[in-house]
Length: 255
Image 1: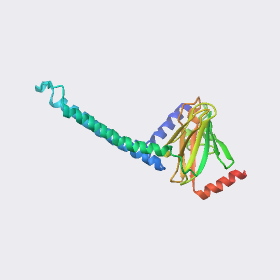
Image 2 (image 1 turned 90 degrees about the horizontal axis):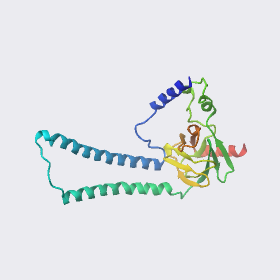
Image 3 (image 1 turned 60 degrees about the vertical axis):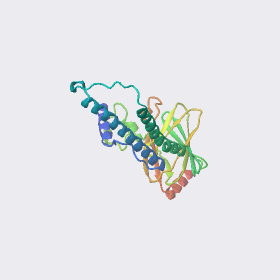
Image 4 (image 1 turned 180 degrees about the horizontal axis):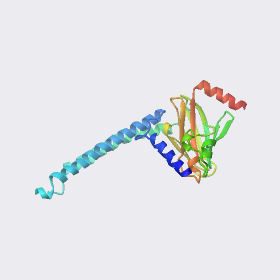
């Protein structure tokens, strides 16, 4: 049953869920993770202090114990403290966040450029200056298994809905600049392990960059609702050694 198969796939996916965001495989993703943990720590401490004070007051100064409310309405010292302390905390969070944002937008030093174009419902990758380009669509096995009436057990489909026929291939430890646009509606190219998510907008070119530190296969998805097959538009990036990339590029040029 397709519906039961969908629930089974969701159950399998839950087993792979994490309670925290991934550290990722780029320097930027590591910085984003550190920022996340810092802000989470600050928010947790603020919640403990705030709710702790509230609970303490509710328990120890309740009317049934004979407590009477204070009548004062102004305390300069307290107001200075609760103004200055949050301001300093916000500055302490804003400075490293701003530094990371500047790095995210700094494309200087790129070693190669890839143009990414979103279509309903696939991607097109073009290696600028290399005369290499191809479409990347949902893998045939997933595309077949997802259809109503298909009896395939989705749990037996490798990387169900997260695999493609032609992945983007890039070399490791290489500053990759990407240009992204769309041929039809708004899409978004998202790879969580890279801390990368950019909108693909018709008639407009966005840009960004990433430098992956570890070889491997990294998966993402279109992250902007783009039509009926939005959920079937995965992103797959294969990061290989520089020698393997050179060999792959030569093979693409000769094919």
